[in-house]
Length: 114
Length: 248
Image (cartoon, rainbow over all chains, first blue to last red; front, top):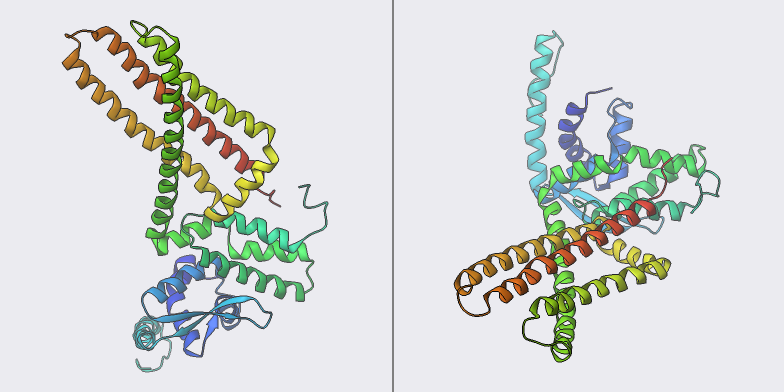
């Protein structure tokens, strides 16, 4: 299980990356993270929404209320153009950290690019 | 409302109770509550598919979403201004409520005062008039309010509940707090102005009577007001803790 601080710090690139695959909503985003991380990254689910709202305020994602298959109101999020740029920067930052640690630990890593 | 473990589980009631609780959070906008509810329902459906009973699925979904304190702290971290905008809303409501109450009670006081001056000898009994005209009507008004509360408790609770659902139950408590703040400022100004006024007029005629009259006005009036508002705040508070659903 990953420490809370790291989970919180990684929420931003995770959300942006998932939304770069197409629009989604809170519950589905959490499921996706849970599946991808093989349940290693466990979010307190309520924590995601303030993150989404902040990204929306920053203009990196856009939100829209729609009606779900079940006929309920659901808020869908999608990546904005500005968000695509921000994701690029996030990738760069995380890869830098990843590569630095990789070199220290003697793990073969890919070149520092996207 | 009985013990939820002994009664049949009703998802809609459980969700409504949960929503009532999170709607009280100052840092939550109504939109966010709807969004969280949508999440809770998605999570519930998913857990039901895994074979959990409705009650288990709801409790687990709720637990995964985080308790009220966690939600409150995450939301207020993300946008602290929402909390204060919501608080401003109830403070304003409190101010309006107290202003309306003051307006009504003051008119009542002037009415009784005018009758009192007709009945009682006006010279030298300012203190008596003061007590009769300021405190009694207010006490009567508060007494009437409390008797009304006791007699029509259930009807009143449902009205309060619907108000609380609209503006958040903690806001009701806040209204009283806002009211107290308004009265405190008003009473402070009143005492100050009386002191200034007295220092100018005690040497002239009728000084003593004026002081007594003003004492009644500055001390008794806020006291009765404070007492009423604090009692009302306490009542709201006890009601809101009673209404809260029991936790599993």
